[in-house]
Image (cartoon, rainbow, N blue to C red; front, side, top):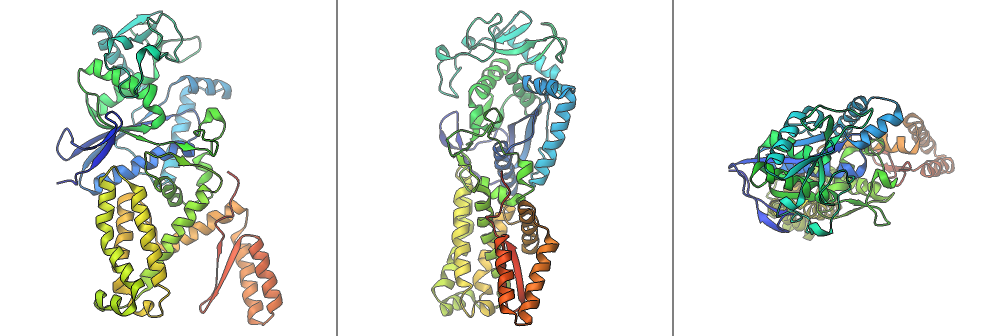
Length: 496
């Protein structure tokens, strides 16, 4: 049987036991991109959160059907395509291709279904026709409007009152200020489809109702997206779908918090404060970005500033360092005996490692708390690094750190952190940090080799001067019994 879990439901505003419609199966629909421009780090939070959530569910034995859509026709797409002098369909396809490159680079699995608005027009028109027949929608001046007063529960998801609302759609034949467009009459030069109400295209909200129904049926187990979508988008989806399908649209609403700037604003293209994920991934390994998103609970706001990603990379590096020293420890004695003889640090590592699986399960089963998981993981990593300083840890510590190594593997399997070999991680960090700093690897390695030669020749002053030069470039040189190693300081970054 799959692992039971609990989830915060935006609809009820409380954490609830998850009960699927079909035993062992979960249908998840997440609102995807409106593809008029590149994916920024705000968008990518939702992508990483739901990728990790789906990964964990599948690991726990759930059969998941994961759906994430593309809005490939929209006012913004039409406007930007006109600015660029290209066809809106060409722009949309180019941006979908770019999105896939970015998500692949982030290491995310593709959804089971990726429906597009332009491929779902017939289903959209069928749902609109049903809403008109049932008295929940009405045509006017080539548009079709949803009547919010026809749905008694309108506003329940977001906690808003109909009398206080006005939709952003222009008042072309609307009966109530909050009525919203299901079908938009065509304007000259815009893409359009023939319909019973005249040529036009779908409104924003109806598309997700139709695509979710097409892929997952009348009721969706879990519907996800950013917190900024609760109103009006998800509120309108509920109204359309429940009036059109005659049943509950979504059992559990799962919303991730937003990235917030130091000013308290959310990140958004309209605000001019975006950082594209494509640019970030040129500078940082994907796992560093993933850790940044998962270090906070998915429902919490996530602060963004210039130090955010370097700090996440430093945290990830400490995890890999702890795993590296643990993997190097030897020994095959009884772990309790070794821990008792090597002292308190050894006993702490053994206890934390053994308790970690239970703590991980408790955290993820209670509203997918990756923040708590990572908190336990960092506590364990710090304990491993303290224990590594014991003079006998290298020869006898293997049995003591074995549970810690198992814990590191569990985190890799369940939420996708620490999935790389340590050597591969170190080399990727070097390559991307060098690129961020505008440095060539060959030039750095030549300077490090020259410093080694100077030290061997006992030209200490010259060697120290070269070390200072490297330090000024952000290169840290570490001398040891096996020679000199180097890394790029994590605070050396390109501007974002």
